[in-house]
Amino acid sequence: MPKFRKKPIVIEAEQYKRVGCGTVSWTVPPGIVARWFRRGQWLKTLEGWMRVSEGDWIITGIKGERYPCKPDIFEATYEPVEEEN
Image (cartoon, rainbow, N blue to C red; front, side):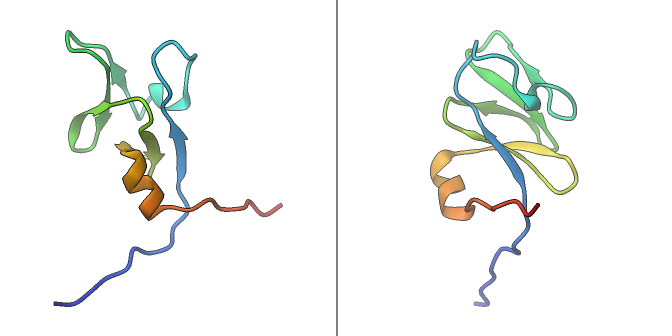
């Protein structure tokens, strides 16, 4: 079976700490967060509503789309990028 490597693209990401920690950038469009009758926070993604748990990373993709990523998956997939001045 052929193998593939993820293309090296730079993304923006912010780790979700918990409710009440102040406003974070992903709570406004295009990422819409809602508190429903269920507990926790929900993020509207291209695939529908996804639950956001404490410690998840909120990734902003190359087209501005936002989606949550579990910490272990984020750590295995991404590494910090030093910004060039």
